[in-house]
Image 1 (spheres, rainbow, N blue to C red):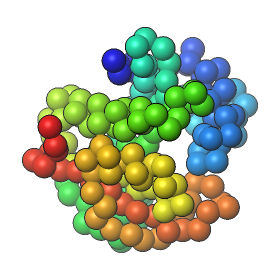
Image 2: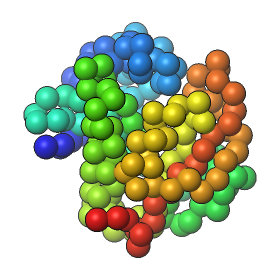
Image 3: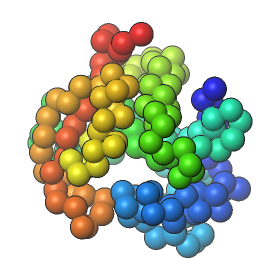
Length: 181
């Protein structure tokens, strides 16, 4: 069973370990000192920034992280997406990682994405869609989105998280009205 709670400061050492994992570091190009983790994730954990960082559990064991936010809360980022695709009012975006390397490649990412989207409709009634940009090079991530019911709606250039990647991103979307059961 997939569950989650808000990430808080006591979780930063675990998040640090995950960000150091090669399969995570490849796509989440973050500094991994505890100070850097606190800098990058502390504002949301303390309620000083919009959005949510959710610690995800599989059968009560820590599995990964989902970041969920209203795009309108990040107008500069929303404008970059709007240069590629129409961004409906009420659009939510997510980012995600599976921290435990033993859980990668087993379909758990798809289940995690599906679960967070289902709960988004329940928890955020004004949410109209979930719009997710993903590096075109990250095939595992965009395949998980497709398997979770999102459809590719656009392709365009965005700044990559990792400078070794080119700028090509796919944008995936699922609308509240079309979410598969």
